[in-house]
Amino acid sequence: MKRAIAGAVLAGGQSRRFGRPKAFALHEGAPFFTWSVAALDPIADELYIVSHPSLVDEFRRQTDIPVLLDVERCRGCGPLAGLYTVMEQSRADWVFVLPCDMPYMRREVTERLASYIDPMFDAIVPLHGVRPEPLVALYHRRLRSVIAELLDAGERRMISLIDRARVRYVDAQQLAADETVWRNVNTEGEYR
Ligand SMILES: Nc1nc2c(ncn2[C@@H]2O[C@H](COP(=O)(O)OP(=O)(O)OP(=O)(O)O)[C@@H](O)[C@H]2O)c(=O)[nH]1
Image (cartoon, rainbow, N blue to C red; front, side, top):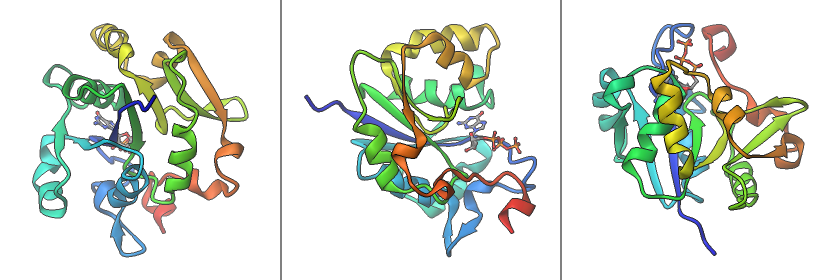
């Protein structure tokens, strides 16, 4: 049975290390966030950008995709708050998150990861050796109450959610032969 997927581009970070909003930096002539959108679009039944009030006007100038703001009680609390926000707004069974700073990510990878959806699990997460990649992952909406608990307890790390979920790990090498797709950009130096 087909399961509804909400795609969520996480773009509510402060880009402190980068020095300006990463989402709008250009890669091959197109803003970073558009590469995440393109990777999610083929598999998502709904698509959102989850961001911060300071970036909304610029997103609205650049795209028609709905921009959600992190829930007020936890604005700027990190990606976990962004994931929770989408679960609050959408009825989709699964939320597929991607960060806005992975411009090499490709639809082949997201399609392959989504093919591992299994209702027996709460999360579908790539694994590099022993290191999970929780920002490129699918989360079932049944985790919403767990996330609320974590946020209420002041917990911000995605890994804390992984610890509480039944996770289906997928070997990152099965998802992409080319490791470049996992590259994210944090600093101006990495960008250059
Ligand atoms: N919606 C939402 N997304 C976030 C939040 N914090 C980080 N993100 C996103 O999560 C991804 C990874 O963020 P990081 O690179 O760790 O943090 P950053 O704030 O963007 O950058 P630094 O300030 O340099 O740490 C990026 O796509 C961010 O935009 C948040 O509070 N809310």
